[in-house]
Length: 391
Ligand code: SF4
Ligand code: SF4
Image 1 (spheres, helix red, strand yellow):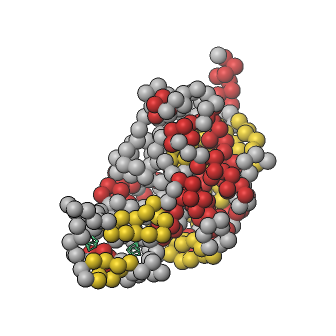
Image 2 (tube, helix red, strand yellow):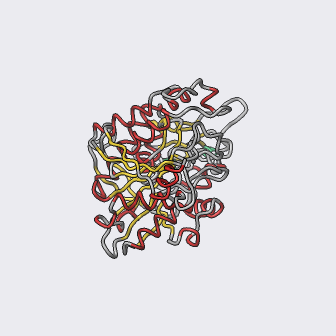
Image 3 (spheres, protein in one colour):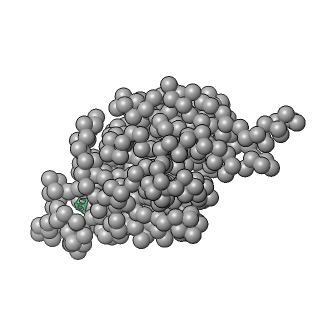
């Protein structure tokens, strides 16, 4: 059974949420993990252009300050977004684009007190391959920037996700900490096709061929032909920014298949850096139905719960998932629309109509990434205890 430390959402004089976050980090005894001079990555997600409920930068700043206090060298790390359809989604597809979004959302070296490093470079293609024996995948594409990291603190906004059911610590690694080809393999099912209609045709502009980083696209009689032996599913050719008529279309994986694949990626990331070189902090705050890759933040589905910390990514996600399910739904949210208001109802399965939330935890446990069995240990600041006595 894994230990998960939990601080509830209540705040007061002498016990704000940053105080609580520090107490949780003290409980983890990070000084036993971080040696003087260690480079400590703090992995988070900066939100998208249009999100308003992504993780707030001051939490990351508090983690940066703790790492400095322990003598480590903090660096806030991320990877390029995949790009998918282009448009607002595609802005995060390059390092410069994503850094611009990060700054708009409040994440800058000044606000964080540490540099920001996009680990897979400007195009998300600065990677190396690492072999794994996953359920579906035999290799993972890891960002080259991972090579210099001694320890990783994974700070995750816990919220819903239409493919995975929810996004927490596991998803922050399995999609968030891999390079673009591994992101593509989670979402794309081995085929990108030319889909023309009566009204919309390929113009023969050849931009898809020009942009392909591995020269997998050849123009034949004015139309693209893709060599899938070469294709690394980077997502450039079918981006709306490249293929303006949007006739080049990927075939998406099912929720179940994508979930199994992203957990394989988690296995790769953890195997590469070493299981003992990670700590996980989940923020069950602003639990939106959709993830922060979407260019909006919908009404939250349950009241804010608090912050959890553990060395086990499966346990911290399971505990966060249980807190959400045990909470009442928020009126006017997707929880109400999908009849998931009652405490005890599986919110994400109801909202998305599939069981990927349960599946990702099961598959991760079977791959040895952690345990669904956990002991939740409440961490209550002295000032809060005093206040509780009075009331
Ligand atoms: S064909 Fe080329 S550009 Fe298109 S997804 Fe594959 S590797 Fe990327
Ligand atoms: S980018 Fe789109 S329109 Fe241009 S050649 Fe490729 S498929 Fe055709």
